[in-house]
Image 1 (cartoon, rainbow, N blue to C red):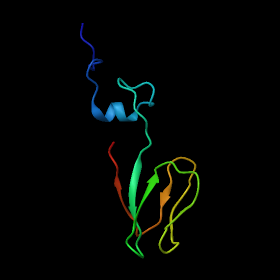
Image 2 (image 1 turned 135 degrees about the horizontal axis):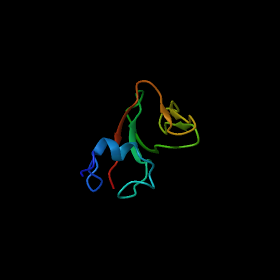
Image 3 (image 1 turned 90 degrees about the vertical axis):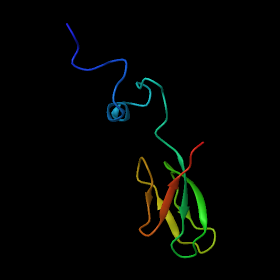
Image 4 (image 1 turned 60 degrees about the vertical axis):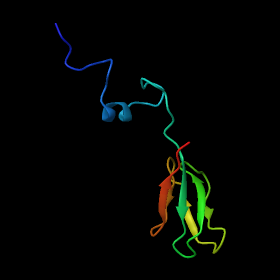
Amino acid sequence: MSLAKDLMYPSFEEEKRRHKKKRLVQSPNSYFMDVKCPGCYKISTIFSHSQEVVPCRGCSIILCRPRGGKCQLTSGCSFRRKHS
């Protein structure tokens, strides 16, 4: 009798869908990211689940707004996920 799926080696998509504490190796869903301002091209470091409006340090354009879970970037902003 064989199982329909392998419990020891789940697929990447299946692990990503699971809750952060029920994964094979626990890992958080949040991360830090570098966001480039569309106006002055300065780079700011922002938390992905920030709970406050984040303005640009150079020109005061709003870079992201909180939306309950992950923050929503303003259109025109580009970002890069930071790796630890």
